[in-house]
Figure (cartoon, rainbow, N blue to C red):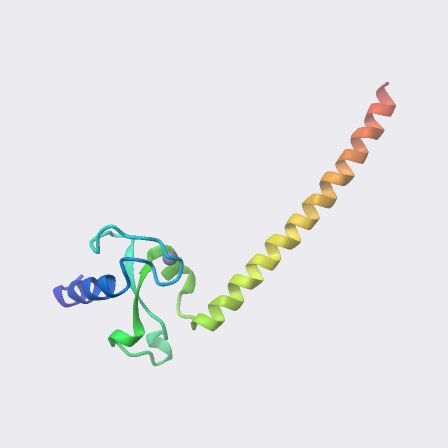
Amino acid sequence: MTDTRRKKLKTIYVANSGECFYCGRKFITPHDPELTIDHIIPKSLGGEDDDGNLVPCCSKCNQEKNSYLPSEWIIRIEFKIAQVQKNIKIRKKMVKSLKLLKIREEDLFS
Ligand SMILES: [Zn+2]
């Protein structure tokens, strides 16, 4: 990281109380290797390199957000949540079916 980049990160870190802009993860120091700078509007979509477009971001959020706009990223997160909820429903059905099978097994071996 260049000195200019390091200074920018420190300024952004202070301005945002040392928290990841997206998940709120708190960083004790701006020198934490997990702390990155994110362009709210990705550079690939014309986002500027100015303070209004730069936020502190943990590496996990930065990786997940990738080069999506925040609105696109939210849709992806909501989709993931919906998938997880769907999987939970499927698992609940499986547990129910397995419980029924267990009862049948008990009947067979009693
Ligand atoms: Zn984060």
